[in-house]
Image (cartoon, rainbow, N blue to C red):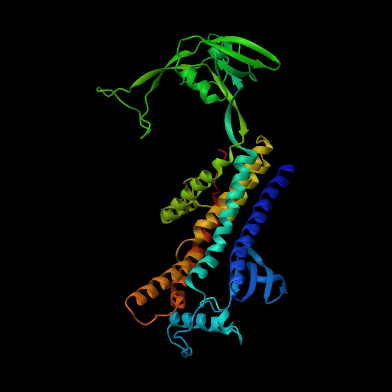
Length: 444
């Protein structure tokens, strides 16, 4: 029962984190819009039916039933078809009707005396600031959450403390998990090492990580190593002689085994002692936060750039026998499920759970940041692209002394917006279905 409650708690954490991220994203649009004098009629978190709202000044603030998005309503999002001209009468084409309806809906929000407070009348750079305010807030949240994860709780690292010591050496081809009479004793056990020991130095060189232990052992096959070991309050001096093993040489770039001229695998001698390290959370310096966020942005952008193939892979896994890619796209349902599993697992330390949860919330905000920069309406990047195109047109008109072409008629892009919404809806439906029937498995 406790595991179930913890699982539900993880889902609630994701839902609350998502709502906060969406709410602050819209605040990122709201604040500059009001500072620039645009009349904002609504600030809403969610879609669908309004379950709570309150009007303060000229803006209605509220929460809707489906907390999977949000919006602010600014008057005059689209300019009239011709400056000072009247909207044309009904059109017979479906897409023409969409464009006309968008213009009429935009015009209907403009009251008497509000003509100068419309969004489309803002200078292009102010429109860009308004539209980038939302993604910028997600970027700030990503830095905050990832900073808490890596510098507050730390990242898991293999320590110099041992969690297990192999009593014997088994052949790599053996299926046995326990020692039997006649098996050679493990070098670490023969040296007197025990689980819980912390290796302080090797041959007088201080040791702080398991990577340093591994490097010293692998470079010293058959060579005695002098260890200084902490066992509780005791300090012990032990001698460890790594067993000599033949290992295949693997190309670092391709991951393939290198071969000799006769086709046989190349090998090299390495040392083996039979120990495994403890994992510990190590807080990272604050200087690692921005590079970590940058790496997350790069990985997210790569997923989006390869989204068609990624979605094909998700579809094949959901409707076939394939497995989901742990690094592939997930819906909010999948993210909630992963966090629920992390929080409910007893074997994961609390600090590691917290770091994972904050890291996932940070990655979620990175996804919102990158995705909203795609230059397609109705995403924020689409409005930014329209403002930039308007600035370019007007600049060229000024250079060549032509008539000012006026604001870009973004309403003409409504048919494309309609198509983008359909694609996004289909993508969301596929990911939700896949996260239900074939969820990502991060724990084997």
